Image 1 (cartoon, rainbow, N blue to C red):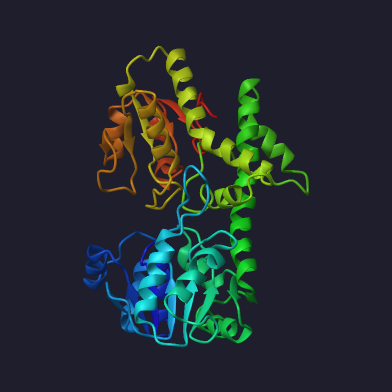
Image 2: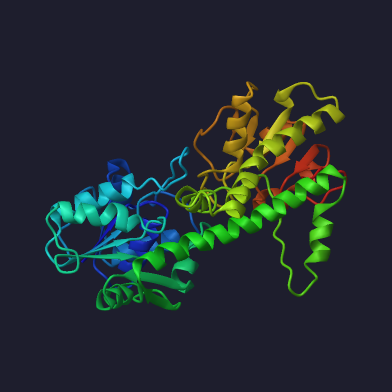
Length: 406
């Protein structure tokens, strides 16, 4: 039996995938309300194919509980935030989960940390916990790191098809864990050492963050001198070895705006490019706020109640709002002492912020300046509704005359 610890955006799909492919799985989460929702037959977030996967997993016998199980294989998939001051990984949730596992696990159990962690986290935090509990690593308890590599909006497909990395102290343990993931993973699964596995996951997201920062900085340069950043990128990308990304209002989600800081925190003297890139990305919500004020002045808008933000999630067509640029932007306004703006997102049904609308037509009726912060299909398909509005499109998805861009 496999006990998956943490039933959030990564742990739940992983547990469902394993259970739907013939493995005995019990999902554990400290959140009793979440567990009750799953036991009632409902998923806890929206994702293409997730409901079908859930049904298959239930048919396969998956169970959900707040209790840790006594078994031979644990997969820990809990959040790993970073300390906002030191920028180092905050491993408190991983440590808490491992401590709970050690209280119930039999000798010989394998603990797989799937959460994204900085290089050396298992050495610094997890190994001492195992030793303090009286276990000998390598005989009583085996440690493995198997970082996830999926993205909201395409989770089910990527769980099936993306390559995976398994980091283990012992090759045979790595191969055993590889076999568990191979029950569903059709991509290549590489077995390596733990520290290499830790580093590769962080480096993957850091690479993406640095590339996003380049496009965001390019947008600022072009705005400064009145150039069209999108036309410049389009032409540059015609070069066979150039692939510049599209700039945006900020970087959201749990990976790209967080993981690179782990390296900055651990190697502050060696991460000049990475640190600068992260600061560029973090500056984008404030850049967007300044652009909003410029557009308001140009059109003589003095009432913030006429300004509406379209989109609350961190990317298009998902309900995941972790670290979303819109939330960052609203926090910046609060720090400036400015009032909240109108907000609408078709994927967020609960009241998440002040002045939140739950209907596109009502939102547009009450808004003069529409700031598109997320490129949901809804706004692309209904762009005709914006023809009489002032539109600031930070995602370059509304091709109407007179639209403002970054």
